[in-house]
Length: 121
Image (cartoon, rainbow, N blue to C red; front, top):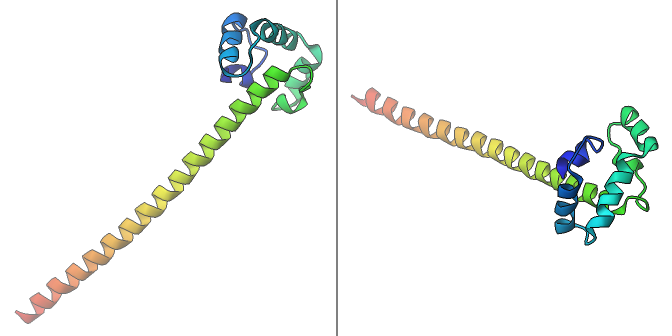
């Protein structure tokens, strides 16, 4: 499904796509197949692909309701995944810097302690 969202005019197995859509979004497999066929043959939408980066904001929600719902779900999934990964990367960086600072403090304390012992002997 995500490949269709990224490039909706590529050749796909419409029956397989409609089956996966009906499992996740819609109930009517025949209506979904017809919507995909109509969408891929819409010349106005094909002309938008060459001009815009993302076609989905321009797609009519009334004419292609199932496909718009799929696009919204897939886009929401990727954006939330990106935000989650970005947050964990930032947390990892903060944790790494904190651990490095703590290790440096420990090494400084150990070094000072050894230095004091060496001076006393």
